[in-house]
Image 1 (cartoon, one colour):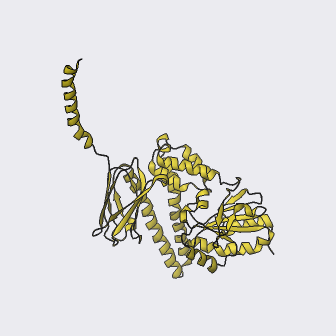
Image 2: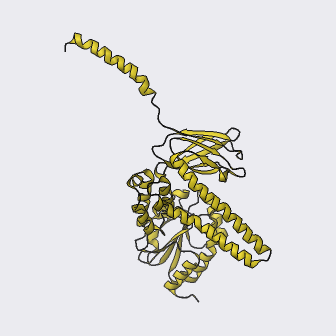
Image 3: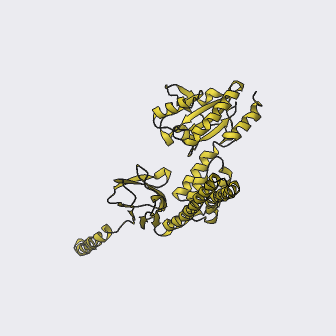
Length: 374
């Protein structure tokens, strides 16, 4: 083909490209569109956090007369959480590239109704079951309390037992969901929440039964990464070495406690259960400190002042450290901490011998190691 005969061909090709270009340019990326009408909401701004821990993001929009809209794109279904600074909005949802609508309950945004398709609707259906169960549980607890106040101890005891059973139903339902729905992103989310140092063995078995497509998803990869991390800090493994600073800036190493039993205690000044456990920790510390027991508290506070006030108020004499990074505390990340209080008992050789000890379980463990205190 010579240059003369080639020219018409090139002109036609160019024309086709010009015709095709707008079509290519107009090809839309699929989006999620969340529209909400939340009558109880008075804040001017609302936040949406979505994605997995390794790739999460937070978007912000203004609220007008209780209405707001979020738009975006996700590569796969991901968990999300709508919230405000005052936490008057607290709505969990699953996001995929479909329209999603939110209307709050007549009494509270806590029971807001989320409507969508696919995974969004699956999560909402499961979440509504949990919410309905919580309503029934709260009602039973209230009836038990009223009966007790009225002096009817028999009825109070019966209602309390029913309330406890209702409360435990949610825990069982959430544990069962991944096994019943191995191809579900919602099931994977529940498994991720369930996976901890105390549940590692069963979590691994549940993960093995997930569908390959879910294992390959971002949330599946996050579960696998969490299992790998927690496998390094389970009972029988050497405690992960770390260094962190005391309030006065002194560097403290875990290795400094070699030769003793040391309880690594993760806590925070704002954590009610942590503060409630401190009197028992103090009692055990006084009983066994001279016998070779010590405590190393790692605070997940972000601000120094409330941390120090809590230490002073609770009269805690043992070593306190923090990097004031909150949940991103480097030691907390190293040990896979996602809830406090949390603890690891390390023996004199540096091996983890127990996890999650508090209250009577801690007392019994220390008594078995050191004998009954005088």
